[in-house]
Length: 408
Ligand SMILES: Nc1nc2c(ncn2[C@@H]2O[C@H](COP(=O)(O)OP(=O)(O)O)[C@@H](O)[C@H]2O)c(=O)[nH]1
Ligand SMILES: *[C@@H]1O[C@H](CO)[C@@H](O)[C@H](O)[C@H]1NC(C)=O
Ligand SMILES: *[C@@H]1O[C@H](CO)[C@@H](O)[C@H](O)[C@H]1NC(C)=O
Ligand SMILES: *[C@@H]1O[C@H](CO)[C@@H](O)[C@H](O)[C@H]1NC(C)=O
Ligand SMILES: [Mg+2]
Image (cartoon, rainbow, N blue to C red; front, side, top):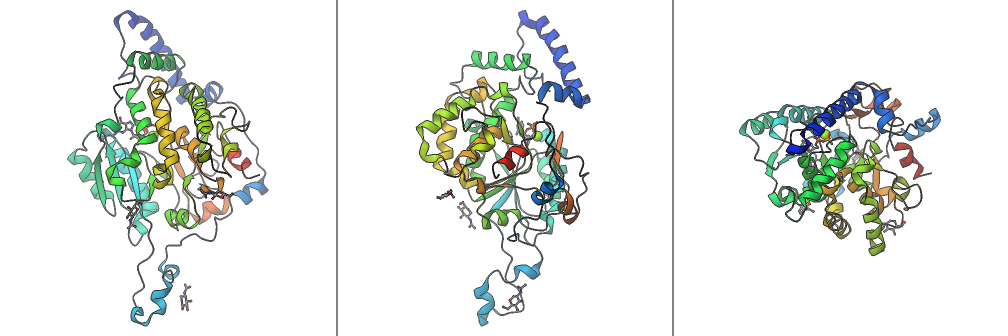
């Protein structure tokens, strides 16, 4: 699949073949051996976190969680309880957020998509009095089979949307020769998805267009889900209402470092943007998460965006819109391979106060090849099925310690 979309010209066929073999070896070794992966990709720093600190960190979230049992939701609308004309034995409908679950997927990912939906429905959505709807997006029409199978497994409403061409494909004004050279540079460095144009389409779409899709206009919140992810723990509260009530805008579970060659000129572009628009920078931002030197250089840390619970209004803001426009005008979603994860993360870290970003430490989550497994009481409370020792938090290229430093 990695090689399928590479355009190999005649004169470089042999060269490409040799490279291909080397690259394939690299990929095989990478997936087979953790040592090889760590020694080739990630800086070797593993933080030792004291038990005390871990206990503190993983203690229960604020008391403002919305427990789903009817008992505690009956009193949310006080005026109704107090007003005699509402005092029927029936309790008022439980609060619900203006939110949707969203998945970008290809038709061929049908069973990976179903698997993720099933996980989400079983761990969270299905138990709600009124389950959250799903939106599926694709740049090609979904097949009837895809739609039927998905309808079989969701517990609430579902909509299937087509992505407008101009939100997806490589724009006309991209210099394809330069983009081709850019792809080769990353291939030589053994970077994943180096050659893939469709991956770049996806990253650009997720960076600047998903929230503009017409099906999302009627919502304020989204939870991004990808095919083939796993949710390990029961959620006994509504994370959307948690976000709303605690004035959060962006939520994550896993953080890590980006591959530097894919975003070589992202930070210089961001620095220029910051200089041009100081008004967008939040006074109490999380710059410390993304830079070791107060913004001089980018430390590659980002929230792993395959999981996101966030506000659509954050992206609809003037700051984000203007930021994405500036980024897109460089063409570097194609000349380099800018990912939506660093693009979202840098925006959240700069335009939001740090208190508006939330680490969902109680959400057990896996997207290959990493997972976050809740620790201690959170693991017990969620009846989690994951191994607490298989936890990316303080290993490899995780940036969770950096995140904690923001609050020290
Ligand atoms: N419709 C569509 N979805 C895509 C395409 N490429 C990736 N995706 C989706 O975009 C998300 C990220 O892609 P994925 O292959 O999982 O990338 P990774 O998580 O970075 O390895 C997933 O939800 C995919 O289903 C594409 O060409 N078309
Ligand atoms: C709801 O309100 C009633 C009366 O106002 C009170 O007696 C009851 O304890 C409340 N229930 C909860 C779960 O707070
Ligand atoms: C949900 O939010 C969207 C976008 O802000 C808004 O247009 C819509 O009216 C809201 N729906 C409800 C039911 O509040
Ligand atoms: C961020 O916090 C500052 C005070 O630290 C406050 O003035 C500002 O309104 C907050 N911004 C947002 C977007 O909440
Ligand atoms: Mg994925």
